[in-house]
Length: 464
Image (cartoon, rainbow, N blue to C red; front, side, top):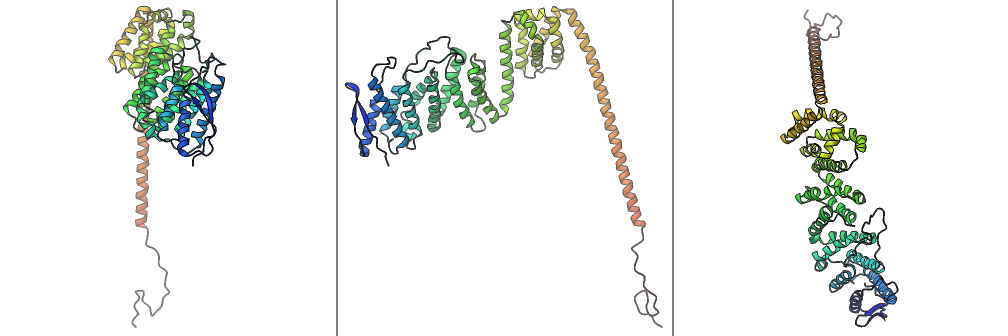
């Protein structure tokens, strides 16, 4: 059954956007569809909301018309027929696709500043609401919609995520999620374009208002990835999601980004190790950037915990982590800070450097460590020699302790072996005694019979 639309307003496009009220009780289905189509066409009229007093009556009429469209598509069945699809998408496109204005505040900080809200929101919200109800309608046919909701449409939709108005981004997030779920042919394209937006954000613009919303959509998408993960999906983690952690505005979308990474790790545990090592490399890069501008007085306050962590990174079996940590000694300013505080820093890292130089599997790391050791030796040869001697003495003590520990374990193992042998022999002896005792024991006694002259013990009668 089709619920009729009442009080359909139709704008006269050729003259002015004032309404022509059409009473419409119990209209035939064909006429209902025709008027619904006209209503969509007339809602393509745009108004200037920067002028608050202009066309007030026309604005109100369009608002009422949009409300009726929303109510109809949400509550009526049989309204969405094929001829209405192009008209609906056209009305949506005309209203929402626009060039976003530049921010009124070039130094806009989403965490500190109030966003500039969209002036046309009274109409724009209803258009988005209509679009959402359109996608969620039981009558919605993806096979029809895909002719009009195409790649060009999706690309324009994604560009709107840069809107400064959080209300618009919230609608866009829900709508794009519905499009992704219903129009399967667009899924790969949507992922690719989100990938491109993030790459531009990371390496070019460093600004995009809708990163958090796009990541929230991706969280749901990643959750639905089939196993095993495709190479394309792993590359997205490596090339896009991990580098997003370097963004200056990370705090704005960190929760959504972390959720996406965790989803990947839950899907495939093999990516965990890569994520951990990649974060270590990124952390070291950020630390170097901080040290480039740190004052010597501030450096003194952090040098001990800092170089303990750097020492741990140098000993990492992952060569990129170790390599990135050793690159600190290639930075002239950091090297000058190290030289000024050599008495504190060298003892923190010397043992690790010496040990890893003998043990690391990667020859590049070994070469870098030799260069660092040579640099320290040139900085303070006496301290270097003292630490070398101390390290060797400590190494001898450690080797002695290791030998003692080995001998102790060997003694315990031999003692345990003898004990087991003794227990085995005792068990065998006891078993032998039991067997001999059983063989020597007489057979079971029989009940004694009374003597009788006529009975022979053999059971035969006696002869007299």
